[in-house]
Length: 392
Ligand code: CP3
Image (cartoon, rainbow, N blue to C red; front, top):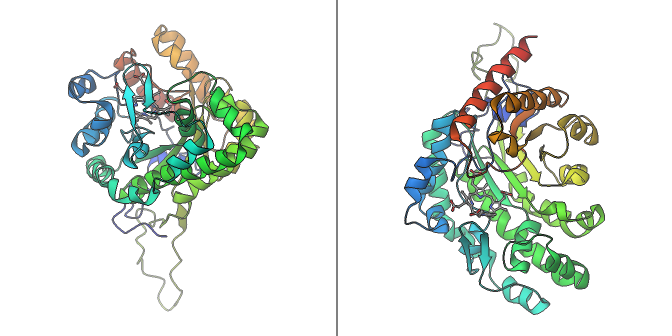
């Protein structure tokens, strides 16, 4: 399905941005940069705005969600906004009892441990989401109107990471109950994964249709799985989740200076070239997923997000040298002395040069205690270092 003509990708507002170019596999002059969790507690303006509002209420208030999304873009001049929301928002919107507890993360009213629990959950109809997603669509449209040429990245949790919260009932270290259900009752597990893929896929699609120029699927906890378990019990559901945005296309507007209706040479009656039809780029990211990079790409992603454990040149080698990469500055180094961080960032850029294209990011989210001025300085460094590199 084609995105409508007003969408920032179809209208040409964001289709030639550094971020979208890099995601499409073309190396721009300057390496684009944004940070996972760039919105949030590292920013005093965020902490001030959030006083008295619970996390999920903030996510469902279009004005607040939009303002929080824009805060780090204004402050750090990053190359993209990431929509302020949470992976559990669509669960709440279909009626799951979930709350985000500060300092802990998502906590469920009940844990989904048995086949009967799974069937009770699956009885919630994912299609009721489409109406309930109105505040999400409003927040995205509001945000992209403000962002102009800066693309907005929409996101969703991958089915496994969401299922891990549902089965455990909250945050956990090894996701033991989830992995037990996966093996102990593979049929119930498959029903749970299919339902979760539907819910999270619809959430992602709504963001893209409303104006997001790229989509990122977070499988934060997939690193807990063996390669075989990932391939058998998880990858099909992640592919299903992504399929909700895989069919969304846009016609690449003509390059600046070459309007679509440029006159052809007199006497030559050539048909106008068809503009290239492109997909909305999809990034797939996980933590501790160095062994799964190939499988994570193969579910239908365009870009692979790499955490800080695998150097980008090695990740590129594992992916056969054909996949744009995103990552992978170690978040711990944000609090190290500047020369240490700078040397690390230059090393990440250097290794990123082996890939077809590179979007600089962290290997996981911004730690809440991060000094925001360090992030601003890091953006300047990447923009300046990227320019020098492309000239040489
Ligand atoms: O700036 C951004 O990156 C966009 C916003 C974003 C949030 N959550 C906001 C948020 C994104 C992309 C997420 C995704 C998310 N949520 C993931 C996947 C990414 C990852 O970090 O691995 C996961 C696993 C969650 C679940 C979740 N929500 C956790 C673990 C937490 C932290 C709990 C805590 O207090 O430490 C949340 C809450 C959350 N989501 C916050 C933010 C800004 C903190 C809420 C606050 O300010 O109190």
